[in-house]
Amino acid sequence: MSVTANLSFTDKVRAHLEILDPVTWISVFPSVAVGAMASGAMQPTLHDFLILFLAFVMFGPLGTGFSQSINDYFDLELDRVNEPDRPIPSGRLTEKEAIWNSVVVFLLALGTGVFLGLHFGGGRGMVVTSSISISLILAYIYSAPPLKLKKNILTSAPAVGIAYSMLPMLAANALFSEIHTEVLWLAGMNFFMGVALIIMNDFKSAKGDEEGGLKSLTVMIGAKHTFLVAFILIDIVFAIFAWLAFTWGFTILMYMVIAGLLMNMIIQFMLYRDPKSGLSFMQHAVDDGFGNAIGKSEVDEHNSFLRYQVANNLLFLVNLLVAGGMIGIKYMHG
Image (cartoon, rainbow, N blue to C red; front, top):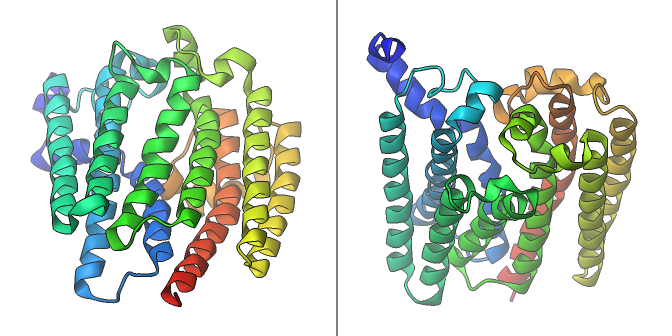
């Protein structure tokens, strides 16, 4: 309480923003961008750009922000061990202030979804409103008892994959067109990629998870085997992506995806061989290039994951964006 009482207005606002974890907001942008591009119907007008911006705000600062703030509230005891500098355990926000933070962003996210749903109406509007509603529900039960999906990796990773990776892409596509079959495939692959990444992201909280009885994959099978499971899942996604590109007639994209798969397998081998310090030559990319976008860590395995994430995201997201553009051009031409 003494820490909270001594904070200036600016520091208090900063704490409210920090509990929304701005680093995580950017994670939904590729999904929203690909969904809109693949529609083939978005026009270079102020209206369409504002709609796209609202979609990103809805799933990013508001939707993702809600998931982070409610997680901090329910995980206070774990954060005292894992991340004691977070706003609540550090005393910069009270638990009551954290609740109000969550309520406000929840209502803003839901209100934006309802507005967009009414704006477009019909089945497309229903997809948009339903997508953000499901995402918010998943965000709540992910952290809140009695379900607390994060207790077990078998429920936590799929919940994150649906809310962060799949639904934003489908909603963004529905903003401008009926949902295309190709977008369903892209959303599915993005879901499994999100699952693989969240599996590895649990490295940062392994100590607190073990003490709190949470069954993350790292706690159950160890860091090295966790890397292996995630890598296999990622490589399967790349392989399916290459096959889909071939069946869609996107030959150049197919070769790009195959090249990405081969490069990924090389860096995966380096990291699996040395989970604590593998890919150390890429540390500067985390510290200087992408540090503000993906975060930093003091846990060796999690820091290795961050280095891998830089490489994997570039390889996968570039191909995903190219696919979205090519699908959009296909539908623009009828």
